[in-house]
Image (cartoon, rainbow over all chains, first blue to last red; front, side, top):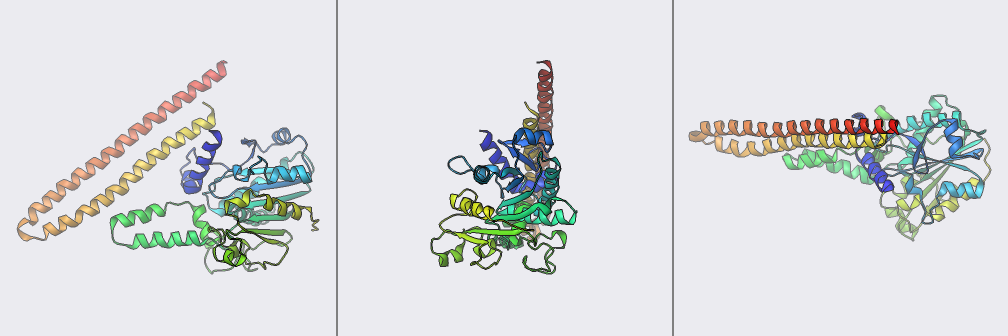
Length: 310
Length: 99
């Protein structure tokens, strides 16, 4: 019951979380670390109690739209974090947040939370790895910039980031929804206009997925590709960025057409060269599958085993 | 009742109240716009223009009254529920301290 309730609240937050946050509604999820399904206070004592033997390497898992940390659970009850702990000794931290807020807002909040982790972590912290699923990857990307702009210490600890099905170049589904809502509103009929207005109630988080433009108010003027060095939010240099896309089809050529139905492959790999070691396409997998697929874990583990220098 | 449950129940109550408030306003607007057209057509016939306009005014008054009543009852119910939830939370806090 508890897990289902949390999932229902997460879905509600993803759908109208910006409204819940704006109106101070008690159903709005606050950004927090969670441990064993419970919010974890960001104090040295609380972290020590939750992680009696904290390692020098920490991995943070950031879920996607309308999810909780439950999305990471593999059929055997493990997840990428617990497997990295077992195999490589990484300490896993799990984030829960209101995915309906604007990505920029969540990015800034995550940057502050990561600085809090650096402050409160009960052992010397040598490395921080970031894993983001879908919208969570964009939140990570935004947090990196926010942390750098605020002069935080944690961006210096990040050497690798993993983006699983993250729509770096936007989601056509959201863009189609935006066009449909505009079309319905423009029809001079009270009923269709009402349906269009209902469509517009979707959260800022969903709307941000359309263009994946993380620039805030100044967005879309002018239009820039996220890999463009002139873009205020490009992938940060000095971090090894690993991009994983899903393809519903086994055949890579068909996969290029449909991707995982929600995020096209080109968007998930941010237009990067598909032959590079830092890009992988997982065949015969849907979008959600990327968050709990043993093949994806194998990729993450291999990438985590590589030494990185800063 | 723990503080998080209480906060969420209050949130759910507020969300329902908001949904009825904004939903009824949107439906009222659609209702009004939909009715305006037949009244305008009827009022375009000169001999019955005056009675049609009067009927439209009465109808719009009734419409306003009905939707306002819905919103008023909604606010009363919401306020009552919020009060009951606060009382239940306060009682739970007292019991927690007592035990």
